Length: 170
Figure 1 (cartoon, rainbow, N blue to C red):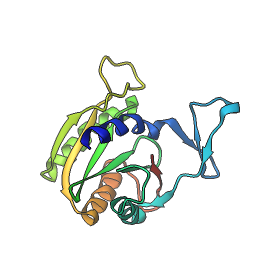
Figure 2 (cartoon, rainbow, N blue to C red):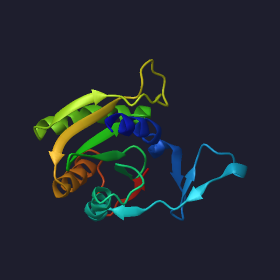
Figure 3 (cartoon, helix red, strand yellow):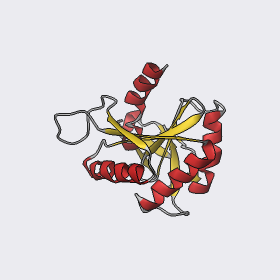
Figure 4 (cartoon, one colour):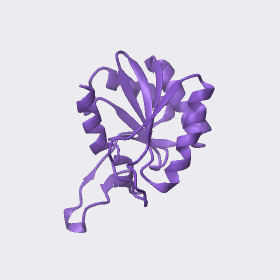
């Protein structure tokens, strides 16, 4: 199961950077030509809706076995359920995301969470001889606690606020 999850993540984690929000709130795949344009409406929440989104995940009401939130692609964090608890992942696909790996490592250390550097085998969108880095923060938190941690990360690390609108990804 863990191998399946990693394979899905290798494909899907890039979704934060493969989509672009239009002014009407729809999301367009930026890898298509105008004649191949694919538009769909991503579910949008403010941070106070994260716990509800995580409840859907926990109840198996999501397309994948994890969800992420992002307001701009850079602040994309993923919530990874494991054995009834939740962990958080962050992948640096773009160069502007790389400094956040260290910030998230310091955040994890300050909360006494174990963090592990890994990769899902994705090629970053910047020049590098390595695959895109992923920080996996082992919070082993309950749904309510990880929702609070997500809010804290988005606020403290990415400087978002209660009015920030997030898309649920993938």
